[in-house]
Image 1 (tube, rainbow, N blue to C red):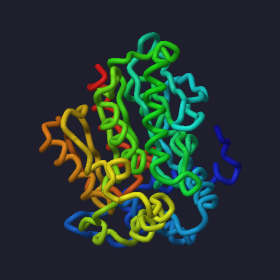
Image 2 (image 1 turned 135 degrees about the vertical axis):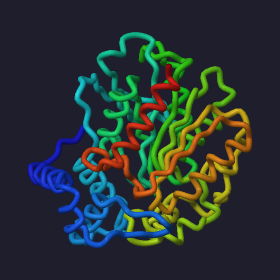
Image 3 (image 1 turned 90 degrees about the vertical axis):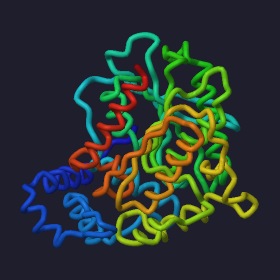
Length: 347
């Protein structure tokens, strides 16, 4: 696990202090309300985006993958959610499609034996993100849902283009299921989750393993990317100014999907997969997210296929809100909703 530098800790404390200001002061600092598509942008998030622009950091992507990876690992810790209760956290090794990959296991003190579990896949457009970028998110989910969380460090593009990420995600899930005794988890209560690209991988895993002896019992999908073949209206409406931009999406796609892979291949676009018989799902979307419409379309497609799928939009939120769920109230509320749904499903 990475350690924050003194400068990063100071920056994080400053940002959290700003977010804790009274609503009136936040509005003065953030500027006039941003209203788009009948929705008003969360004032804390609006101020955060303003601070990002002042630092010359508009959207995701655009530089080299290595630079973007360093950026997300540092930035994601600044406003990450926190947990109060103790967790046992350790790094582990998991089977991949080729060789092995890393993982991280989070066990709440209350989870003794035969515990419910969540297999989590981090976001980052299949190019960036890591165990560290979503460490706070996984800690919060383990704490709030009262389950073991196993985070999967799948291989990233462009070094490992599609479908390497999907293949790793499936292999890791099956490895975790096979080693349930070692991890002291209940094979009847293993859910899958992820945000953005990780939501995509969780959906792919749910489809690929539905007929396995051990299959996911629940899908918790935060603003998933599920369709590389079609750009829906939200991509055009929120193309610029809300962290994930159309240019960001093109940058990620260009690094992830090689020319010999069809954009509608279910391994990269799970909305085109066979949906009947999937585990129940809860899909959470952000109102100011370019991926909003495809996430909601995926929930509707699952419903049409007879899957118990619930969808909830958080109209004031942008893409990536899980990583801001420490001080940003709307993001924290969405994380709480997801954790509550997970806890209920795992009971």
